Length: 116
Image (tube, rainbow, N blue to C red; front, side, top):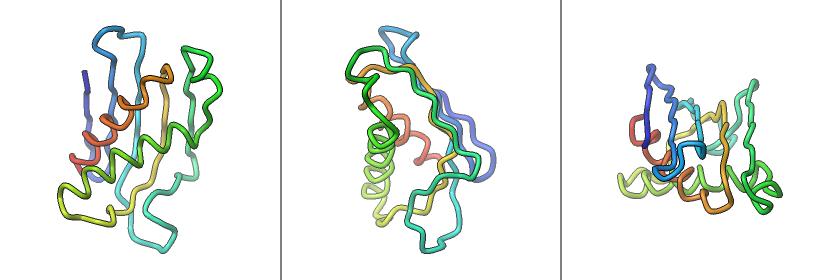
């Protein structure tokens, strides 16, 4: 289940695994002005707190989780012929995830970016 809250140019997305609600992710990101820093940057108060539920997920770092977010955003941008994607500032990545839940992060990012 995916829940989205939108406040102007910022979205908060929470996705829970349908078969296990103890597996979840929350993303907070917002549109920003283009500034030459690339299309995805971290907010100055960025936070990432992901608890891995299996050995492989516990070995993941920010780059692994963020790659799924990028994939979701690129998917929406391509579908809407908005390449490159609109610049985004990532504020939070929180969750409790297994290695096999990377696709859920991408779907959460897709849903959130589509709202922007």
